[in-house]
Image 1 (cartoon, each protein chain N blue to C red):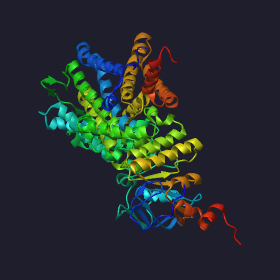
Image 2 (image 1 turned 90 degrees about the horizontal axis):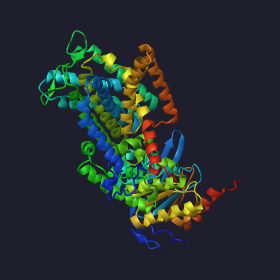
Image 3 (image 1 turned 90 degrees about the vertical axis):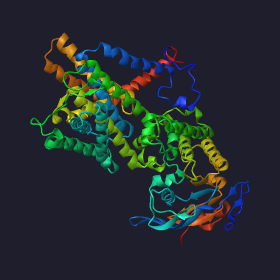
Image 4 (image 1 turned 135 degrees about the vertical axis):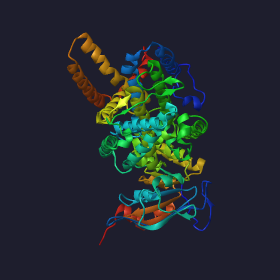
Length: 277
Length: 358
């Protein structure tokens, strides 16, 4: 499945497979991130459009995860601006970023091991649950209503990701592949505007990767969720994503459709190595 | 066989989220409540109430409080004794300042005051974790005891430095002082214990409880899904201290009647309540009750068996108790970190299938 190069000027356009890609929802402008003397990210700019699947790829240590951490508020870049929904985002804490509708999963699974699958998915709804301590302590009125309403949404996500059978199982007992899926469910339960996936397919076999790819496409298709993902499996990236950012040693070396990126000489050099003479 | 959920269907999410989703559990809970309210008060005498029921009910509240902080939110605290002292002294000051107000109000207000103090001493938890936090709360323990010893205003300038509960009644029934009826003090404490358990259960199964558990299991992930760690930890400290304050107030006013702070609310009290939740089960309301019952019953049982039946000297029995509790703590920490509550859960899982496990 090859896609044409992106029409940068148009506000929104329709892809070959019939999905509508909207205007820019998030824009990174000249981001530079340093840890002491090490520049993890050097002057990188790119944008994420509404409804698209945006991949960030690059060799190990290229700064991909750091980039994701900048988006989700873990790191505050020394230079550059983050624009979200048409406004510049002031430096904020990760939980404030989450409240703005940005959810993410982690490279190493970060589930709450002591809780059941259902409770884990319900934690994804926490930003939406507003009832006070007193109401909750009595479990009457608003607190109970809110609990049931949010449970319905959580159950929809559980249905969608086909984890109904394990909803009462403690997460600690689940195998790796299912844990990845539960983590996706938790992020999805928040009904995010942008979903950040940090290596959603790391450590999976071919079938699990196919399952996960299908879920990612379905999420994008059915909920219209914008997805930014980091992935090492090139086949997956080229098939899933609408546009790809390629990073190497903290610099951006390519940006465009999978087709463009694949034929970019600098990208080929970064991945395959190049002879220096 | 007899414990099963076949034919027991929940048809709405509200039903599925109730405290006891299985009918059998629900009926057993009603039965226990019935016995506690309608049978025990008519059977007890002073000895049973003072040596068993009052300490059990009061320690259960403290254990619930500490369990919210340690078991649900994962913040280790060794300041329980100090916070109980805050509840006791707050209650004493309120009782003497406003003699006409109902004891219910005094006890609840003592809880609220302790909640504020607890939230204050919870502030370091934002920066430090684990052992270091435990040491910080240890400082709270020693500071609070020192404060109540050294500032005469807290004990109304009494010559002995002690506080003693004046006689107060509720709805015309005497519940503090030396001339109380056994059933009255029992019922008064029972109301607070049942109320605390219900509130704690409601909080821990709702969104606040999920925030606490998220912080406990992985604080970074909790933050990324939108939990404000500052607010989650401070509410845990406040709610936990609220319960501990209530238990301290009851411990002083109903159970002991007169208190010398270093003796009643010293560091050993903090450890006792911590042992209760370790043996009973971290992160479980039932475990708080089980732990409190166990550590209240153990000395009584040992005394009956050792002193009364076998005729051993009392000091040997007292030391034996330390040995047993110490050994049990080690065994539980290694073999079953989730305590009696987990044993109970496993037993229930097995009973569901028994006698046909396949």
